[in-house]
Image (cartoon, rainbow, N blue to C red):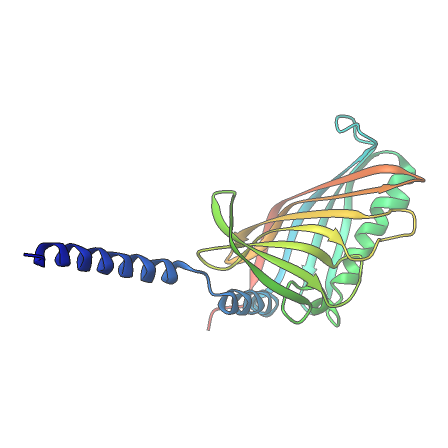
Length: 238
């Protein structure tokens, strides 16, 4: 006379077992995610022979985010084995900010993309300690993403201590946010950084970036960068 109750209990336990199995199956694999990030960086380096894009830089000072202190639009050319170069298309506003702020920033990009050392700036396990944040997700530009904490193995102005947001479906980079592990100069203070990515030709490319610094001498400076009009030359498929 206890058989129906036993069957109900067994059915409930079986259902819970299936639910637990499904939940485990949905849990992201940190090793696989980091491995895929490493592979994606190498694949982009190997297969993107060149690209051009247009980058628009806007500098705001203090708390005024309506009236730019300076602006600059440049055309950037990347060539594998050579690095990056740029041509200034337009510029306006403070000549001091252009000369001592924006032009050094562009020159720094050239230095970072030196073919001999460019791999040192990649978001890979060779350059960063990486740990998945269990259960932390966020929608970014319609992409459901996992969060990975990153701590650079060395301190540099282009190395970020913060969070990577990685597409849950394909483990490609969606966004990075945090602070520079080393201030770009003794005058800039702590620099908060953010870069937003989207897939182009199968590779994560920057479409928007922000860098905000505060110092007792110069106050608050915000640089906003928008990237557009990408054109690629890829290695022919084998």
